[in-house]
Length: 416
Image (tube, rainbow, N blue to C red; front, side, top):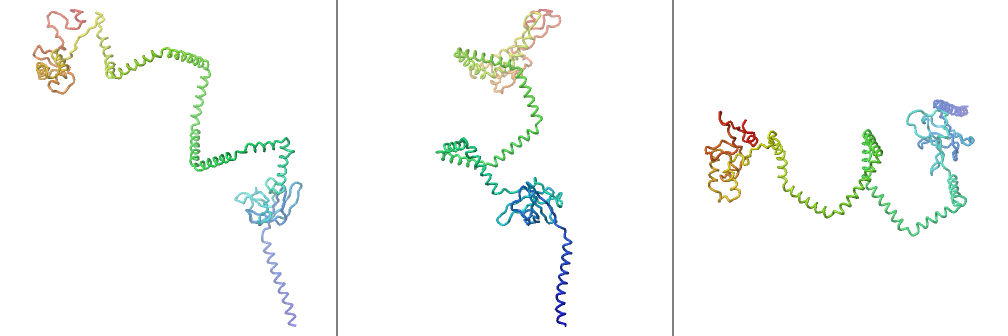
């Protein structure tokens, strides 16, 4: 009996182990959350079936559960891993097949934060896209050919004329077309090599526009002022037109005058050139005259005596120098030094010894450096060497009573 009992116990043990394993699986499966569902609406779902992949960034996260036509749209029900978060505004795209994969549904974009897609959510038609089918391409090409055919654009031969005209224009111009394309290629190469300069120009232009934007107030003020000037010119357009007409008339008369008097004008300009040359050469003298003339006119005004109607003057042409010194100075300028009389040298020595004024010529006789003109000094004891610039002393009390004013006006006025 032990043999059958042992054989019967073995299947029971195996069944018990299977039950325990199934129970453990049920417990484990019962702890995982169920997959999430989402429904997307497409215009068509060619090549998409239950079991097709649902992917995010090309990674499979679920599968298609059902594909159901809904009138003009197709409803595709999908489920995906509950651990994968999908953005609330996700889109559903049907990706065409590649060499290694069939068509699948792509949920995009990948989740990067924010609200997530709810369970059993729906993606509307506006957020879905399907690939273009080969039939659509054929249909588009067929439609294009039909529009260009004899029942379309070429109904009146326009397309044929276009082709014929293009052929006629291009015929014999192959080399020119080649040169044009070659030049264009070289131009693009130059632009490519100088892209730094181009970008620098664009940057500088951007800085210029930025500076203009920052100076918007000044630019607007300038535009307003320019508008005001333009308005004023517009208001005075009649006067400006008259002025331009008068100017044209004057220029015409000037042209006629110049043409008729060309030789005279030429001689006058030449004479003016000579006068200008003289003025340039005598610049120092002209400057001296301009400096002295106002003082001379002022002195002349002050010399006028309204009582007698005369000019009261006191001649002192030789300044602080006596006649002998003046004469010797003239001799020194006119004759060689060996011919200057010895009396002039003696005069110069006497004046220098007594500290009296010396002209530059007399100083030259004594080999003295030139000096500034003296304003006078004490007269010498010798009455023959007197200063002509000395004033005449007043008469002693009880004298003749003649005025001490030696000027012409004083002489004319007589005694007081």
